[in-house]
Image (cartoon, rainbow, N blue to C red):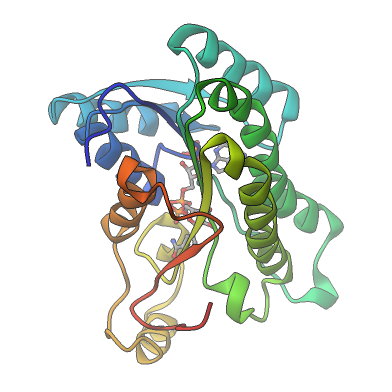
Length: 249
Ligand SMILES: NC(=O)c1ccc[n+]([C@@H]2O[C@H](COP(=O)([O-])OP(=O)(O)OC[C@H]3O[C@@H](n4cnc5c(N)ncnc54)[C@H](OP(=O)(O)O)[C@@H]3O)[C@@H](O)[C@H]2O)c1
């Protein structure tokens, strides 16, 4: 599944799942844009790992929730590299709390980053894809968008929103040979889940038929397929990478 000659952009590529996706796409031959918001050092580490593996990449810092900044950066990348062929909307945050106590700012921050960010970046990247009559947009949602989770009404809404967003965009762009799909990870070992206590982790594992949390590489393997030329007849879908925790669609 060679990605030779393709340019990819992975939002939130500095750490966790995004970093693993960057590495995987670069090893397959894509030139990979590694986006971060505040952790430039981590983004440089991702780039160093790519280079050590014989791949090519570049670092691009911008806040996906800041429409002007995201549009400007993607316009620059398009000018320099002839467009983004593969966009992975991975940047995400949590601001957990029970609904009764959740501040409006926590709702806005999660929706702006996880959902509006995907809209802004997709809109900015799709013009060049349309011109080339080829593109791959992959949105990283979550098992929480399907199951819900007490304490995460903002995150659940944003992740469920990404599903409807992706299906509608898939219909709009199908005629231009651009596919739009989601990956819904279950619980994956990253900074985002490292704050969970041992007890909670054991409780989660008990709900996972495969009996363990996933790795960023498990998600990157799914991204690798959805980014490939070979996945061209798959659009509007969600690929669940969750150890069997949720089997619906
Ligand atoms: N871990 C899980 O169990 C799990 C499960 C389901 C879904 N997901 C989803 O998978 C994605 C990645 O999660 P993760 O666990 O890898 O998270 P993580 O380890 O916390 O990393 C988050 C990444 O997103 C970037 N980011 C955050 N806000 C941003 C913004 N406004 N603009 C640009 N980049 C931003 C961070 O950049 P900096 O390094 O600069 O902070 C970092 O690279 C998220 O969408 C998350 O919701 C994760």
